Length: 153
Image 1 (cartoon, rainbow, N blue to C red):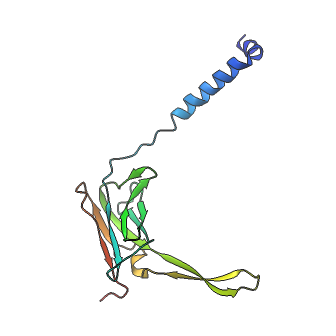
Image 2: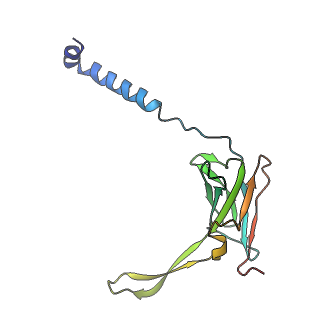
Image 3: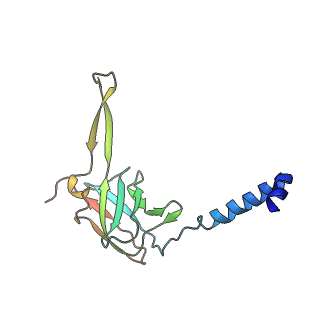
């Protein structure tokens, strides 16, 4: 009975189809975002702002998502939890900071492609996530700064 109606009235079929898809997708569109604290700060290397570095906070307890940012020209960052959601969940974090610079050498490889020199700017002991850099995220919204050095004492 209904199928005969839908064959005779294709517009009604299309409207009901779109309504069904809208209801089905409506349940999937919501993002369940936990309570976040704003996290901002500045990263320096040898007392100079570190521009273009990626900073990542990974929860030490393994729960939740990590949060990350790319530093500005002045070395400042604001963590993003998800696109459109700034901050990180309160807790203890291991922090990694990386900056890779790719430059062309002026030579070509045997297939004719430009050769590239890839260099990590930040020393490896800051990029491993082994607990050398840590941070505690709370509701205080105080800046969390990182003063890196090329050669530790």
